[in-house]
View 1 (cartoon, rainbow, N blue to C red):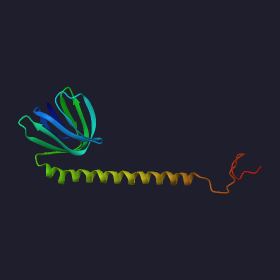
View 2 (spheres, one colour):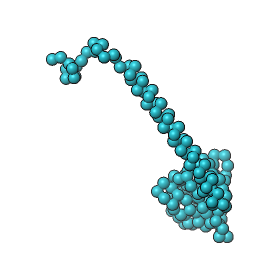
View 3 (cartoon, helix red, strand yellow):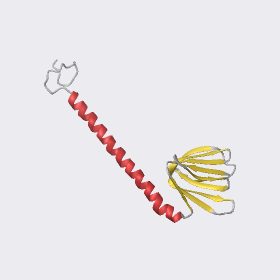
View 4 (cartoon, rainbow, N blue to C red):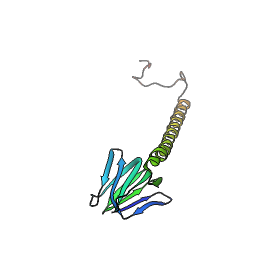
Length: 146
């Protein structure tokens, strides 16, 4: 079966000798064998493993991305990938780096959202007329005279 792992800048893995591919999405780990049904899934940060025709296992750490099975080939598009046969190194060093960046991105997004909310509150505060400024009240409004 053909396996291709690409980033925006490079093709990290390209082989047509994959007998089995293992990966993980947010719902958990799964495997792909030759003849697997076509599908598409979003990958979690993790290690994708494949077994080659000679029985050797190979690994590539992926920083999320998409995995597509299409007519017997597996294609992975990911923002960042590091291939290597040392699984311990990929799990201890590379995945820690990927997850650290993911946490930094989440923190930056949260800070940006807080600034956005604060700006909207400030605009609303500045647009609200001062209290007691003779704002006409409609019947049924609290404080309206009858």
